[in-house]
Length: 202
Image 1 (cartoon, rainbow, N blue to C red):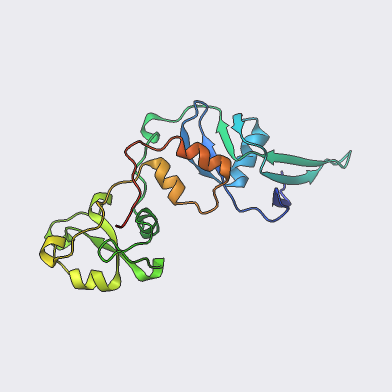
Image 2: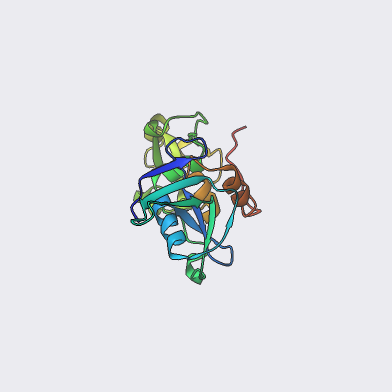
Protein backbone atom coordinates (compact mmCIF):
# COMPACT_ATOMS: atom_id res chain seq x y z
CA UNK A 1 0.00 0.00 0.00
CA UNK A 2 1.40 3.38 -0.98
CA UNK A 3 1.16 5.91 1.83
CA UNK A 4 0.51 9.51 0.87
CA UNK A 5 0.14 11.38 4.14
CA UNK A 6 0.16 11.06 7.89
CA UNK A 7 -1.99 13.39 9.96
CA UNK A 8 -2.80 13.62 13.63
CA UNK A 9 -6.14 14.58 15.11
CA UNK A 10 -5.37 18.29 14.55
CA UNK A 11 -4.55 17.79 10.87
CA UNK A 12 -0.83 18.43 11.32
CA UNK A 13 1.94 16.03 10.27
CA UNK A 14 2.10 13.42 13.00
CA UNK A 15 5.38 12.36 14.62
CA UNK A 16 4.07 10.49 17.66
CA UNK A 17 4.83 6.79 17.67
CA UNK A 18 2.49 3.91 18.46
CA UNK A 19 3.01 1.87 21.64
CA UNK A 20 3.41 -1.78 20.72
CA UNK A 21 2.16 -4.65 22.92
CA UNK A 22 1.88 -8.38 22.44
CA UNK A 23 -1.51 -10.14 22.53
CA UNK A 24 -1.18 -10.63 26.32
CA UNK A 25 -0.73 -6.91 26.89
CA UNK A 26 3.00 -7.05 27.57
CA UNK A 27 4.74 -3.82 26.62
CA UNK A 28 7.25 -4.24 23.79
CA UNK A 29 8.49 -0.96 22.32
CA UNK A 30 7.63 2.18 20.39
CA UNK A 31 6.60 1.45 16.83
CA UNK A 32 6.68 3.73 13.79
CA UNK A 33 3.40 4.57 12.07
CA UNK A 34 4.68 2.68 9.02
CA UNK A 35 5.15 -0.55 11.01
CA UNK A 36 1.81 -0.06 12.77
CA UNK A 37 0.06 0.41 9.44
CA UNK A 38 1.54 -2.87 8.21
CA UNK A 39 0.02 -4.67 11.21
CA UNK A 40 -3.42 -3.28 10.37
CA UNK A 41 -3.12 -4.14 6.68
CA UNK A 42 -1.99 -7.72 7.45
CA UNK A 43 -4.83 -8.21 9.92
CA UNK A 44 -2.27 -8.80 12.68
CA UNK A 45 -3.81 -6.41 15.24
CA UNK A 46 -5.30 -8.32 18.19
CA UNK A 47 -6.78 -5.31 19.99
CA UNK A 48 -6.21 -1.61 20.59
CA UNK A 49 -6.55 1.02 23.33
CA UNK A 50 -7.65 4.61 22.90
CA UNK A 51 -9.37 6.55 20.18
CA UNK A 52 -7.70 6.69 16.74
CA UNK A 53 -4.87 9.23 16.85
CA UNK A 54 -3.74 9.36 13.24
CA UNK A 55 -5.13 8.65 9.80
CA UNK A 56 -3.05 7.04 7.07
CA UNK A 57 -4.14 7.59 3.49
CA UNK A 58 -3.03 5.02 0.93
CA UNK A 59 -3.55 4.49 -2.77
CA UNK A 60 -6.84 4.41 -4.67
CA UNK A 61 -8.62 1.30 -5.84
CA UNK A 62 -8.21 1.11 -9.61
CA UNK A 63 -11.81 0.29 -10.48
CA UNK A 64 -13.75 2.32 -7.91
CA UNK A 65 -11.29 5.13 -7.23
CA UNK A 66 -11.88 4.67 -3.49
CA UNK A 67 -8.88 5.64 -1.39
CA UNK A 68 -7.68 3.24 1.29
CA UNK A 69 -7.66 4.71 4.80
CA UNK A 70 -6.26 3.24 8.01
CA UNK A 71 -7.01 4.84 11.38
CA UNK A 72 -4.22 4.04 13.87
CA UNK A 73 -4.72 3.80 17.62
CA UNK A 74 -2.15 5.03 20.17
CA UNK A 75 -1.70 1.55 21.70
CA UNK A 76 -1.73 -1.53 19.49
CA UNK A 77 -1.46 -5.19 20.53
CA UNK A 78 -0.19 -7.50 17.82
CA UNK A 79 -1.17 -11.15 17.56
CA UNK A 80 1.35 -13.46 19.20
CA UNK A 81 3.34 -13.43 22.41
CA UNK A 82 6.67 -11.89 23.27
CA UNK A 83 9.61 -14.16 24.00
CA UNK A 84 10.34 -14.42 27.76
CA UNK A 85 13.76 -12.82 27.25
CA UNK A 86 12.10 -9.78 25.69
CA UNK A 87 9.74 -8.97 28.56
CA UNK A 88 12.08 -6.69 30.52
CA UNK A 89 15.17 -6.00 28.41
CA UNK A 90 17.92 -3.80 29.75
CA UNK A 91 17.69 -0.36 28.13
CA UNK A 92 20.71 0.57 26.04
CA UNK A 93 23.01 2.89 27.95
CA UNK A 94 23.31 6.00 25.81
CA UNK A 95 24.11 9.54 26.89
CA UNK A 96 20.64 10.71 25.85
CA UNK A 97 18.98 8.00 27.98
CA UNK A 98 21.33 8.69 30.90
CA UNK A 99 20.68 12.43 30.88
CA UNK A 100 16.94 11.78 30.70
CA UNK A 101 17.14 9.40 33.68
CA UNK A 102 18.93 12.08 35.70
CA UNK A 103 16.48 14.81 34.58
CA UNK A 104 19.35 16.71 32.90
CA UNK A 105 20.85 17.51 36.29
CA UNK A 106 24.48 17.26 37.26
CA UNK A 107 24.37 14.81 40.16
CA UNK A 108 27.31 16.53 41.81
CA UNK A 109 26.40 20.22 41.82
CA UNK A 110 22.64 19.77 41.28
CA UNK A 111 22.34 22.31 38.48
CA UNK A 112 20.33 21.69 35.33
CA UNK A 113 22.10 21.67 31.96
CA UNK A 114 21.35 21.03 28.31
CA UNK A 115 22.40 17.66 26.94
CA UNK A 116 25.36 19.33 25.21
CA UNK A 117 26.67 20.61 28.54
CA UNK A 118 26.50 17.24 30.28
CA UNK A 119 28.93 14.33 30.29
CA UNK A 120 28.81 10.71 31.37
CA UNK A 121 30.75 10.30 34.60
CA UNK A 122 31.75 6.91 35.99
CA UNK A 123 31.24 6.92 39.76
CA UNK A 124 34.06 4.41 40.12
CA UNK A 125 36.40 5.42 37.28
CA UNK A 126 37.09 2.82 34.60
CA UNK A 127 40.80 3.29 35.33
CA UNK A 128 40.02 2.09 38.86
CA UNK A 129 38.07 -0.98 37.75
CA UNK A 130 34.66 0.66 37.37
CA UNK A 131 32.31 -0.58 34.68
CA UNK A 132 30.28 1.24 32.05
CA UNK A 133 26.80 0.23 33.26
CA UNK A 134 23.72 1.99 34.59
CA UNK A 135 24.59 1.57 38.28
CA UNK A 136 28.01 3.17 37.84
CA UNK A 137 27.26 6.21 35.68
CA UNK A 138 25.70 9.59 36.37
CA UNK A 139 25.17 12.84 34.51
CA UNK A 140 27.80 15.44 35.33
CA UNK A 141 28.50 18.92 34.03
CA UNK A 142 31.86 19.43 32.40
CA UNK A 143 33.20 21.40 35.36
CA UNK A 144 32.30 18.74 37.93
CA UNK A 145 33.58 15.94 35.72
CA UNK A 146 36.96 17.66 35.33
CA UNK A 147 37.11 18.44 39.04
CA UNK A 148 36.35 14.84 40.03
CA UNK A 149 38.88 13.46 37.57
CA UNK A 150 39.89 9.83 38.14
CA UNK A 151 38.79 9.83 41.77
CA UNK A 152 35.75 8.37 43.45
CA UNK A 153 33.14 10.83 44.80
CA UNK A 154 34.39 10.22 48.35
CA UNK A 155 38.02 10.87 47.40
CA UNK A 156 37.03 14.06 45.58
CA UNK A 157 34.77 15.28 48.38
CA UNK A 158 31.86 15.37 45.90
CA UNK A 159 29.00 13.26 47.27
CA UNK A 160 26.36 12.11 44.81
CA UNK A 161 22.95 13.73 45.10
CA UNK A 162 21.15 10.56 43.95
CA UNK A 163 21.99 6.89 43.61
CA UNK A 164 22.43 5.70 40.01
CA UNK A 165 20.12 2.87 38.96
CA UNK A 166 19.09 0.89 35.91
CA UNK A 167 15.72 2.12 34.60
CA UNK A 168 13.06 -0.49 33.95
CA UNK A 169 12.00 -0.98 30.35
CA UNK A 170 8.79 1.01 30.97
CA UNK A 171 10.76 3.90 32.48
CA UNK A 172 13.05 3.80 29.48
CA UNK A 173 10.11 4.06 27.08
CA UNK A 174 8.80 7.10 28.94
CA UNK A 175 12.21 8.75 29.04
CA UNK A 176 13.00 8.05 25.38
CA UNK A 177 9.90 9.62 23.82
CA UNK A 178 9.08 13.33 24.02
CA UNK A 179 5.78 12.97 22.13
CA UNK A 180 3.80 10.61 24.34
CA UNK A 181 0.02 10.81 24.03
CA UNK A 182 -2.19 10.93 27.14
CA UNK A 183 -3.52 7.38 26.61
CA UNK A 184 0.02 6.07 26.23
CA UNK A 185 1.31 7.86 29.31
CA UNK A 186 -1.57 6.64 31.45
CA UNK A 187 -0.98 3.07 30.31
CA UNK A 188 2.78 3.23 30.86
CA UNK A 189 2.49 4.83 34.29
CA UNK A 190 0.17 2.03 35.39
CA UNK A 191 3.00 -0.41 34.62
CA UNK A 192 5.83 1.42 36.39
CA UNK A 193 7.62 -0.64 39.05
CA UNK A 194 6.74 0.32 42.62
CA UNK A 195 10.43 0.82 43.39
CA UNK A 196 10.67 3.61 40.83
CA UNK A 197 11.90 6.93 42.11
CA UNK A 198 12.44 10.24 40.38
CA UNK A 199 15.65 12.22 40.59
CA UNK A 200 14.99 14.94 43.16
CA UNK A 201 17.55 17.40 44.44
CA UNK A 202 16.96 18.83 47.88
